[in-house]
Length: 128
Image (cartoon, rainbow, N blue to C red; front, top):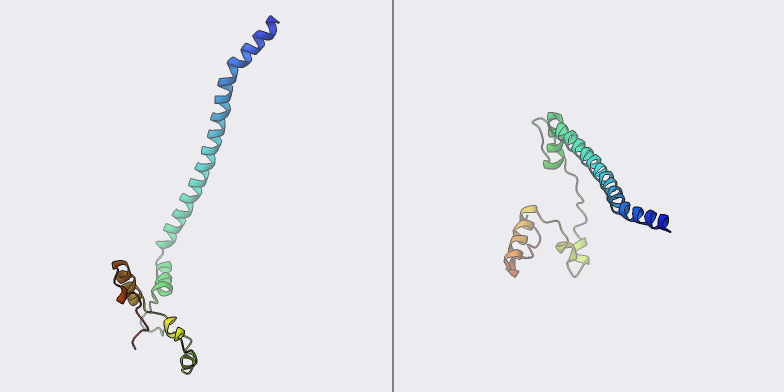
């Protein structure tokens, strides 16, 4: 019985440090996985930074995002002209409301809506 009590006392004495050891190992594994993910993200960002330093990439992005045209190039914009009689068939005029609005009119409309001016919230169809 004394031997059993000693084994129980020894098990209880070692349970706390053993639990801390296992928790510490688990935390180290989690931190290692987080470090690996951060290293991968840093590598991706460095690759993106290297790519953005390339003048050809900059020119490509300017052409795509800003519709930049170099001297001598020809810009062709293809759009859906539609049938002029389409708006007459819709009595509610939803096609005029769904027409694309230039970015600056949308910006002014959202600023006016944020200011609380209800007369400026709907910029309406663009004036040609």
